[in-house]
Length: 183
Image (cartoon, rainbow, N blue to C red; front, side, top):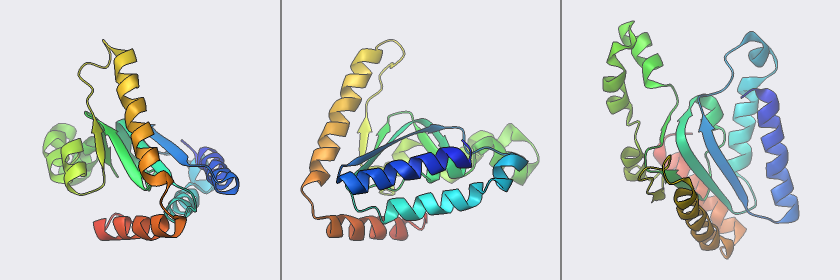
């Protein structure tokens, strides 16, 4: 995911506001592009602008975390009124392997780093970052059933925020992310 992808996502955010539609973001990324091109293209600024836009979005919002969400690219699409996570999904500003390499100069300690970072859906739920967990069972063997469960969760969460005044949603969203110390 490069700066262009985040600019495109931000256009979608603005469109949702203009059309007074709810916004749904789906997070499944190994992170933002780690290249000179991405940095020169303004990746860090796009991540910051995306966070700012989502937290202040004047439209109801739901984010869905599927599998992995790492780095600034994942965090840039996370802020929402409600967050749904697949049972085995995880979120981290830095993959556990990267954290292990930085701290221990080897990736051998990645499982320990994952534990310390709280890189699992249970920790995300306990911290208040995730509001709704969708059972995966074996999604690879039953993709239709998993997609149906996820669709029901999305429908439920969108309905839960649909009637709430925008000013209350924006205020609660700001509190949610400032209390977590994430943003």
